Length: 116
Length: 115
Image 1 (tube, rainbow over the protein chains, first blue to last red):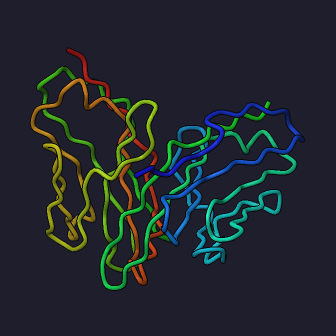
Image 2: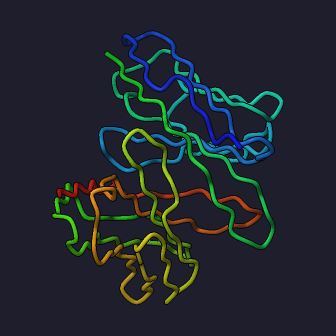
């Protein structure tokens, strides 16, 4: 079974440009999460989808970030326009809800974004 | 808000040495605690977890005990191998209501093991 897949693995863009990151969760997983690690600091939660609905987007830094999950399958995270402080590693994770028990979140390899 | 603090790295050890990576947390409720590991070129993998006080999580020779009195979840391994070289992240989740497990991570500790 394929794991969580993220594209691209690396992206280098200029300040002011637009970048779109993609995440393909494990097939059948309703929960999809985006996280970000900036400059070797802690990994921070960005947002959470349940199927196609945004359940929690409290971690989104500002309105330059737009996440979508049309059809409840793959998700995209667009940064427009990118700023220098957006550089970091963006992780995607997915899990399948199960009432009354812990569910493990499976992470992708991450997309390393560098804004120059 | 909830937070996780772990020791800064890098930690450099010789093979077969004893490993401890300290992790402490701040949480208002009764969180579940985790250690994740990221090997070079790979994604984050769950290493072990503990869901209540005094629970011990263990996997691949690694152990961590949920200590509520000291709000700690230190990672230990008795004899490290070169293949353990990776970045280790301590994390907490404040609940699994409906299977939703939003994680709060520490900054990560890089471990380098030399032959």
